[in-house]
Image (tube, rainbow, N blue to C red; front, side, top):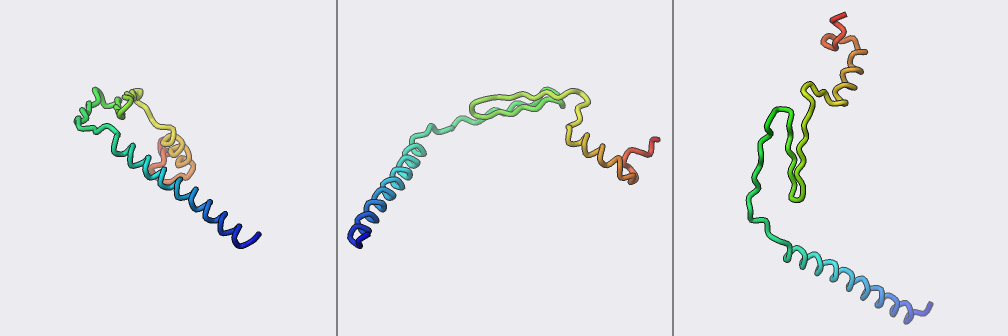
Length: 95
């Protein structure tokens, strides 16, 4: 490859790279500037009970209602593995 061909190729690749970067920065700035402003305060709703959790985003609202005596699976597994240790308070004192 000749030096002149290499320099021409390098110039073209640099131009394509520069156009891509400026396009990306310009589109980010345009969409950042043109997005709607959220001036309305969010109204947070308190859960109606201790077993109800409300998770609200801009597009959805999710209400999670747990059973009355719900124990997460991670806590169940932890308690099960801890019962093998034989340490005080591990749950095998009732036997």
